[in-house]
Length: 277
Ligand SMILES: [Zn+2]
Image (cartoon, rainbow, N blue to C red; front, side):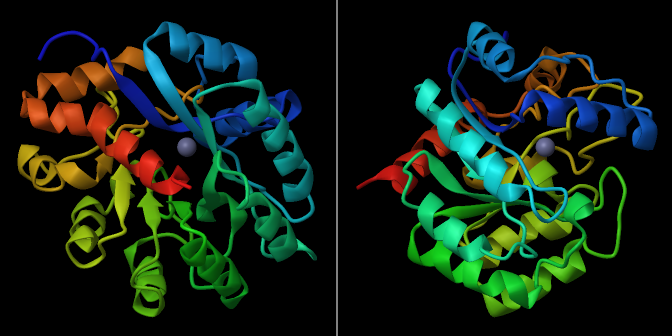
């Protein structure tokens, strides 16, 4: 396969209100010395991705502290109304007084596919009992959770395979998407797909050009789990050009079925199954 694929669904985009984007870009610079190269706000993000050939955009945002999820989700509801072919994983913080009431309202919106939990930033365990009602709601309403639960780019006590497996012990059918292929514990997270049929993984930030390190298991694992992998870019929070990860994936010379599935078909089928009436 050569060239950027004609049909792309991007399952890992971030859209935030302008002020929060500014704060996040400053935090990346301070914490990781990451210079975000596409500092554009939400409308421009959507336009740029569409111009690059991305048809459907699935974005998320998260509440870095208690008290902001409600406003963030009002903003999400407004943005989702503005655009076709735009879906969202909404913000949630278990420390909010009316978190579950808010979630119950949001799951009625067909363009909200579920919730994003960013455990590296939000600082709670995935098996925190305050989340159990949310998990039950998500399972009951055919929604999903997008987890940042890997130890990349850095770890904390809340991320990693061990704490995540405790959630699956209790909720083996949790419809979870593991961002970044579970980086840095790629094998462990990918192998969870063998036992947990509702589990997917996304590719965001795993195929950066040198000197960045990323996915390191070779083509075998990618082909083996190709029905469970979704392409994601992390746009606009990128530190290398948008095309670079796609080109690196293409350079691996995987099967055309792999590329069809991860760039489009898996996501299309998943969105269909989540939005059917
Ligand atoms: Zn992300």
